[in-house]
Image (cartoon, rainbow, N blue to C red; front, side, top):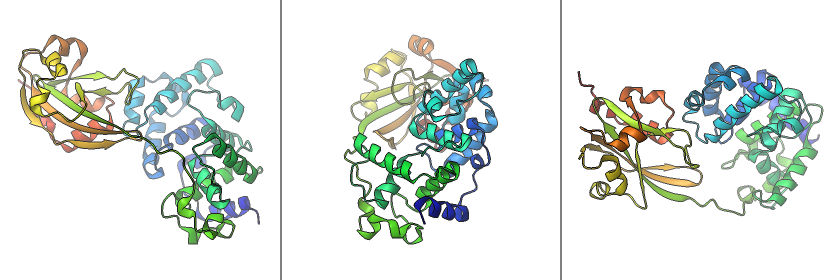
Length: 358
């Protein structure tokens, strides 16, 4: 029996019941595929349900304010995905009459839709016989066929894409692509794969040669940049100050408190002498009422060590007044903030420092 038939038979017995598998709506399939990038299915499911309830159609997403979209996305990370989705929804509504392209070649032209996502939408929504190839598929075929070409090279990706296309069930591309996704997500996992439950074990070169843990091969190691953040949370009559990140950096368009970034973690003595602190407060001399312990926050390419400092501000400096938005502290959860800030506010009862003056 051929690979695709074995895999589909296994899938029919073991498939996960997921809501995006009960629709051929390209919008909802698109949303699910974008959410599941860099996200576990268990976490992505909740976000998918919330996102499609808030924005049930491409029209509702296109008409939404970007801040609202980012707020619904908050906690998923990789916020460029949400910004690209919003821009693409606008393009589809404004230029395509609200109708998704019905082929891989049309879908791949849209902003934020790459090879995998275009293939997935084409196969699931329009039954086009294309192989959706992501990290799961690279891993599976590197192991099954003993491919040692690094998967993070153009040559490796092309080699495995060719294998994936040759394995495709062209009569049932929608079922086959779902099957291989489930297979990679539940059996042929990156670590501790469940080889003895594998339906294609007899075909697997890596199992025969005891190289399962060595495949797939990667030639490059991700180099992490280390950064040190000190977030300052000013309090003035129950209000605080935030601004939207505008630099081409992490968390673009998300809101944050005034930030001092340094080459190492600053002590409080060093912080109050820092140029950013002096610019924020001048000679107003705010009262420091709380200093958090430093916490580590890890992104794919960055490692951030952060601490939070709550200060009471009797007089609002011109910089705070002009460069930041003043809001009631209890409204902070209405704004889209980085998960780093969201997590800190959830763990630390900072609101006790923000009792409004009557």
